[in-house]
Image (cartoon, rainbow over all chains, first blue to last red):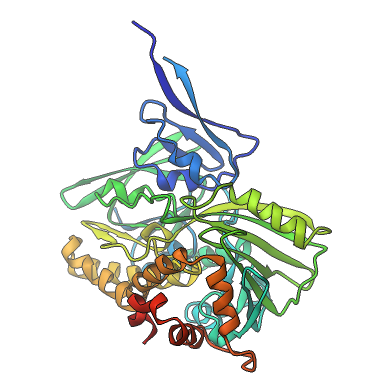
Length: 67
Length: 387
């Protein structure tokens, strides 16, 4: 299968303050806050980056990667 | 089978649980965290009236009483409001870690079952019964209930399972960071608010005293307008204003400021508090409305069980209650917020200058009225809010 570019969101766990801001803006339900641990479901994430935009701590980043 | 499963043990969820349990319902209150009330995501201010309507104030959960608010224009011009006129979020500064636990205890004393470190991760409606899937420490199981009350905060997912999309847009949310600070100088009898696009675009910086020598110093910004993270804006402010201050705690959070939602009910479901976007679009305060909503949802749940009717049509009476009490106000505040967002710092300074200096204490309403007189164009389309 040919490789293609995909966007994904990565969490800097040293910065994340597990506040849930990113969850409240994700219309794809691509993330979940399990107590203090932020999970990102890559299969649902479109890489739209709205979560990174609202993160109070600057803990989220959209990166490009090959699948 | 439960009568009600409540997701989230914040003030909204716990008041709902207490109300249901006191009226004899079979109640389960589920909290995903292992400690109720922690981590705090709140500036912790509430007016005396709003608190006392539901809870007898106790010393152990009140960190500080304040007598008013000091509001600063971008250029530093100050106005001072007395407590009964400053609005809903000034009066008591709570210790939420203690307060939330106290409310959950009241709920459990009234007869509600409480589960912590437990996530309600899926909901399935069938034949007027909701199957709630629960997960705790790797164990998964299912309970049945007639009604679900979603009190799962700003990150609420419960609504979506029932077909209500409450996803927030970047202009419908405040992104917040707060430090608990010591070694700072302030008047512990006042809450402080600093306004201005340059310091907090689409939001403001606050200081809420937690005692004589410590205070919550925090910021909310609107991500659609902000050029940096709220943490960066706050650090800049703190470096300038409280350079000797020490940060002894850090919290972050998000506040829904989209205003009144169309409905907070679906078949077998009611939403309360931040999950229903009940926070005030101007101040960001949410405790008072969450407790009111919890109380109303609890009352309606009791009626629904009596009538054995859990349809959205029946539960609409909950919509009616919260909308009449504070929902309409949320809609107006959202309109006013849209206006304020368009104001630049110079206009804001001008407005502050135009407020008569000889009047020491004014109400928010009186101030808005004064602005309206001087700058009718500015606020013309929100005049209904003023008069």
